[in-house]
Length: 108
Image (cartoon, rainbow, N blue to C red):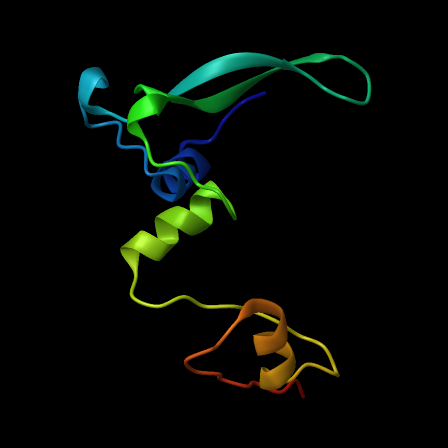
């Protein structure tokens, strides 16, 4: 598989990988790896982000996902995208907790 540089640069930004850092200073490394496809077992060469630090020194993420945790640290406040004909602020708060602000956008 041939990789274009533009998507890798975007993925590096999303993952927080900085290729300009020295290897020992970078928390993640992007490396080519071999992986097997689930559907047929065929080997594929792909890029993977590998942890480059002792996980014992990291704060465990008990709920949610890594990317959500990273975004929460970078921007003030959080955003949630929800849709459906029966959704309301009260229903969302019942499911996920108190919301500071709700911007409702209707489809036309």
